[in-house]
Image (cartoon, rainbow over all chains, first blue to last red; front, side):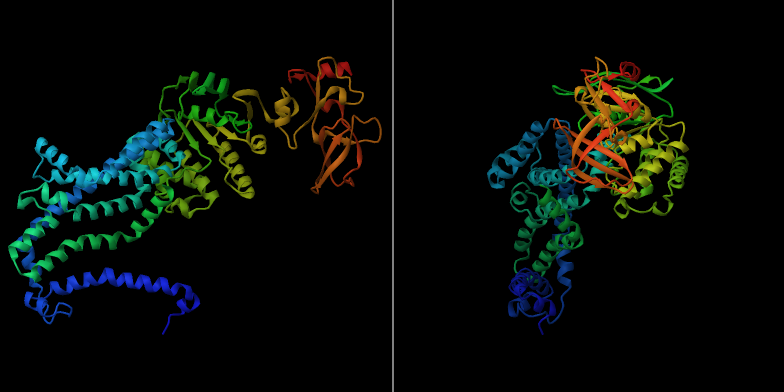
Length: 282
Length: 346
């Protein structure tokens, strides 16, 4: 039976059909992954499209003890640090720019802003060799910092862009009021601007997490030690080490993808509103 | 001793001088209102007193202490903003307590002050609400309550009623007047462009124009004895009619009087010996008064405010007179010519 809502607005039918198709395209691979992570390798080869005949939860336990746990923790450390550093620097930079504009040195603030945004134009592939040399010179190669610092640098432009747009909408009177209440500049940022910008900060945290968790190029080049590898790089070794144990490998993929999917689901409400704010006020 | 003294205070933004030497003394417990047209510098002056902008030149003393370089938080002032400036992520209670918390007051003292302010403004039922859950009038009451909790030496109000509708404006105005009575020791400085607010609230009014003070006085002083043409026309609604002296019939007001001002409410319809005659352009019947807008023979616009109903119609020619003691004269520089001098001449 056709839902009444569609009958009232038949023009929406193509849109709904398209969105339904899109949902299938996005959701089915996830379903396939979860379904196959619960099968033996033989069953995957025999019937990869069907549901598992026996649910092999052991695949997850085995993936975890065979190395995923270490990669997972590395990813948590790198992603968590990148988010913290990116948000801290972006908030301070955006606040500085907004304050500078309010104090009548808007032109200088705009130059700094453009310089920040210009960072978006540099592709990671272009910066790979110089960054590699830099990491070696600084003695950071093969450490978590070798990922955290470039990841932060690459996330700063878009994060500053979004946070600044929201900060610009904070009424000037609130600044003045906080000054009268005894806040210094940092306290104004901490007590007024940041709490008022929770949506966009959470949005930026999700986007940064998505980037840092899944980044592959820097992760395989800047880290040599298996002990320090993050999940995307680690899974490469994982496959080689496990050879054809596809059930365990797919379980590893589910473990790798799960945190970001969960983060999106939990933060969805803030994510959407924060993104809308950034888009409109920019 | 004056609570607050401004001496030759100037403020420039780049090459633009916004305040051109302000001298003013405000007594303790006074409610003083700054009025003037947009861009006259009244809000800038308030921001200088608050410590939100730096004084370019001159000195500002509060309670006998020069505070030019004292940060806003340490000036013992509290400010109520036109936009309320409530922190949107804090409840009413947290909004009111925030400044006190930043001053590191003991928790018990913070609670006492917040409770007192809440009782004074009947805010108790709203204390756990966020600003977005309040009406405009409630928000402004919270903003006033927040100012009260600071127990300041000087309250600063920056057009606090501008965002309210007409009915709430009157109610909040009465509330502020009541606050002034309940806190007799507190000095209050109030900025507005609404002369009704100025006339009804002020102990004294400071009329500003183009970065200068035109006149300081009680509302009735300003109304009855405006120091110059600008004040004469700014105070009163509709504005005072100002005409060249020679265009007033039989108008010998002395050699110094170049222009003559008569308030619309002082004009009367007369049968003989009119001061002015004019052709009616528009009539507004408001019940208690009739407003007539007319054009004189020399093409000048005048307004007449007559008590009660009057059967005047468009295109009528009206003869208008006024008692001599209600006539204000100004010299060629726009300055007031004393009433005695005028009466002697006539």
